[in-house]
Each structure stands twice: as C-alpha cells, then as structure tokens.
Image (cartoon, rainbow, N blue to C red; front, side, top):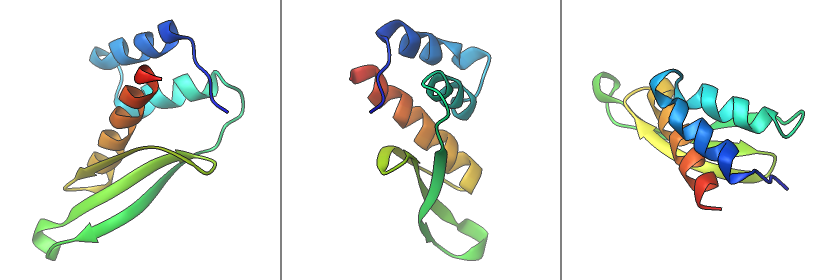
Length: 90
C-alpha cells in the first residue's frame, strides 16, 4: 500500500518547472522504498505517420495513471502526470 504525506505529493507537483513528470513520480515513489514502476503499452492506433499511444503507469498490480500521446515517451509523461494528480487527491 502506497501512502504519502500530502506535503510530499505537493512538492512533487511543484517541481514541474525543474523536472519532468516521470522523474517527479519516480522520486516520490522511491521515498516509499524499493518500488518497481512499470510503464505499460495499453493501445497503439493510427497509421505509421500519425500513431497515437496509450500508456499506463503502475506499481505492482495498482495502476496509478494513464496517458496518451503521439509517442510512447509523450504518453508515459502524461500517465505520470495523471498519477501525480491522482496521488494528490488521495
């Protein structure tokens, strides 16, 4: 079970001007100890010249967020941002 102090999540959200979402999420989760963060491809659609990806970020069996983008990297960043926002609401 992941549990965060509200201040830790808020700090991670505020680091946005310095760090990307994946880095902020990784640093926040690693404060919980040795956690395995997994980015999973959920869907890939569209023609080769205009692909659209849906990625999910999870810790163990718990999905923390999903994101979409024109590249896997962009979709991973969006998923990490969604995860940070979800953790802030907990």
